[in-house]
Length: 183
Image (cartoon, rainbow, N blue to C red; front, side):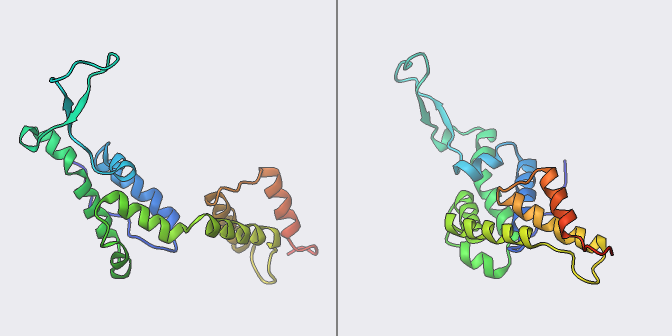
């Protein structure tokens, strides 16, 4: 069995990276774990034998807990496992902000709201990132490697906010950002 000890620790500053790593980490535990995050706790269902089929599909009803198989119990517990994993990634301050959430889905949505903000916040972040791109210039005394690292982080930020430039646009921007008199 794989080891799941290395849980990506939450960081508001690196939220986008944490989010990707947590999606992978949760899915590695169980294929249905991401379903629990996006749709909420799993309901254990069975075919309702008391009624006939509706348009060729059987009607489903929730299984009583006494009817659960070992596999059903495992699926029903996925929300608890996901909450436990999410709790372990959070520091005391962030945990205080989500501790009233009752499901893993609510926790995930609250973290998303806290870190990504609403549509207006996202639009403001995109505007600032575009300004960084437009105003990017190599600083006096900055090495090409330092400029490349700084410029790459701007591009990554833009992509995470849904804005992408073509390779040609990026190349032209880099050429304009370099000092005219050489380095």
